[in-house]
View 1: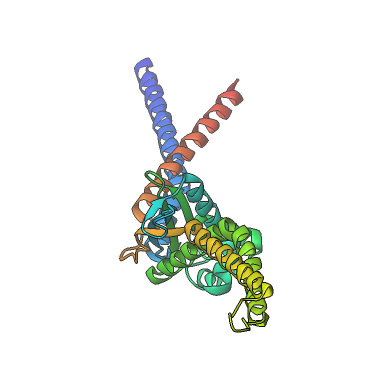
View 2: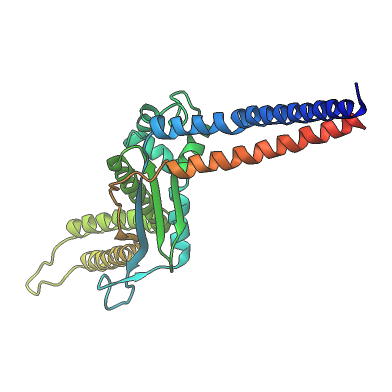
Length: 295
């Protein structure tokens, strides 16, 4: 065999080896792409396209207000309160007590355990900590413009989302007044007892007698005591009215007409991008291992 033929055979062999290496790399790339990108993306398409349950969000915007506290115009108008009241309303909605109220009166746990699927629903045997974590993921209360409070509630039906929102707003208003009015309510109970005693004393006091119908000192004292008790009770009632907090609804609770979650296309694209990134990381690691092995 001539030298030229030998050179041709060597070149052909080298070309075949190079082609075999390229084919092996291509196969590895295809397999890697199928495992790290194709399978996760296909599963995401199947899950978000066929299995993921729709979730609806009811949005409410409220402000905390109280009656004007002027001496001549109690109840004549309303003013927006300080941001402390909005923060208290927000914290009340985010509390475990609010969750307990929803579970007790609105069947919140039953709704979230019987709807959705194994990934989006609340397990029936979920403990209090898991239930509260699930609750905080689906109920968001945050400050809006000014001192407004924005409440967003997720549920598996539009009606349930609106119902839970309404119940939470009622609970927040109740908690606000429970904190603001507790001392006055205790005083009002005492004043009510004193008023009842003063009325009994007035009824038992002797009436005026004699031709000049002079009022006996005991009756005068009872009348004065009754007047003081009535004035005290009236002042406390006015203070209760002045310090009462009201959640004034600016908008909502809305009954959504379209599902807000899951964001199907966005979720599928997110899985695709993350899968590509993961494949790139794995490829770099494998390349580094091969280079290290050659050394």
